[in-house]
Figure 1 (spheres, rainbow, N blue to C red):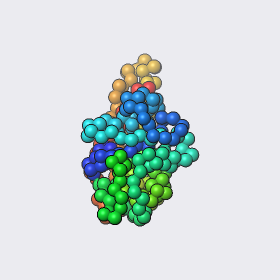
Figure 2: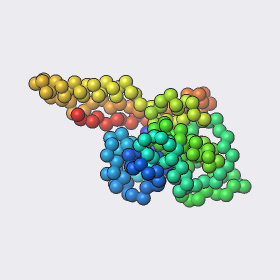
Figure 3: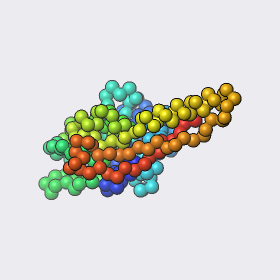
Figure 4: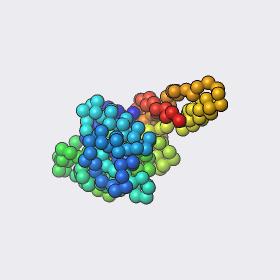
Length: 231
């Protein structure tokens, strides 16, 4: 949903900042298949797989940056990404949602390089907030110079400046699905019916930030099933 949202806005130079690829922040040179093979944890693997599938279908090869799993410096991966693919610095002034179509630089500014990213997909809202700080440190405006999308839609999303565009998870539905799967396994081990092999998909959507919803209508929610994990 998040990757498609950026594609629908017209972005084609897209970066990814994610965990699960190592503790040393930096830009990846491995292929998509190698990155997926290296990402053992379920959540980072599935999010990376979803992003890569959507971007590959559009012919987009993203720049992937590693963020340490410990979340101590949530801007480290973004600094590595933006250092590798830079844009012309401009005065940071923005109070708008963190995604919009890519814009051309003003006539007086030096054009960005062909490899400069115009949008970043982040593994979590915490990493997205770090990406906002990294962009601000480089003088980049969000979303005028750089669009940023988080994941989780936790309380942090409405307190960032500007408020985050993020992927909302239905945590209650995920909890019910997990408990249902566990009860199926328990019942099977006690001689009851066999465990189910699938559960109802839990949708995720990309909402517009709440504080700016009136001035900036939300993009149409796009269902994004969360795969069932057999126990």
